[in-house]
Image (cartoon, rainbow, N blue to C red):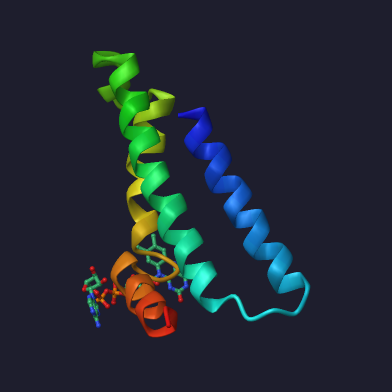
Length: 91
Ligand SMILES: Cc1cc2nc3c(=O)[nH]c(=O)nc-3n(C[C@H](O)[C@H](O)[C@H](O)COP(=O)(O)OP(=O)(O)OC[C@H]3O[C@@H](n4cnc5c(N)ncnc54)[C@H](O)[C@@H]3O)c2cc1C
């Protein structure tokens, strides 16, 4: 889980550095968002699993993270729209 988060963070920072350098990073922004969201899905799912029944209960931190995570693939551009943007810039 920590490795996935770290890879996601590094990719995001790399894309941000490209933008700071004035490069066109439209495709990479969408890739980074989708990648980070899929990592977040997996990590919050696994976190609930680790805590077992307690992780499922309202009031536990991981339950809140799991629930809040769900909006990430919708807000700020849905996963499907990100894929559309990537496909338009892939070649
Ligand atoms: C908690 C929350 C906070 C938000 N905050 C903000 C905010 O601060 N500012 C703001 O501007 N907006 C905000 N939004 C709105 C958010 O950006 C939209 O919900 C999002 O862009 C999706 O639009 P929609 O809900 O109209 O879904 P729709 O556009 O109706 O899409 C529904 C589904 O169809 C898919 N879909 C749509 N078009 C295509 C296509 N061409 N190809 C393939 N699949 C497609 C979508 O990916 C999605 O899965 C927020 C949303 C939520 C839930």
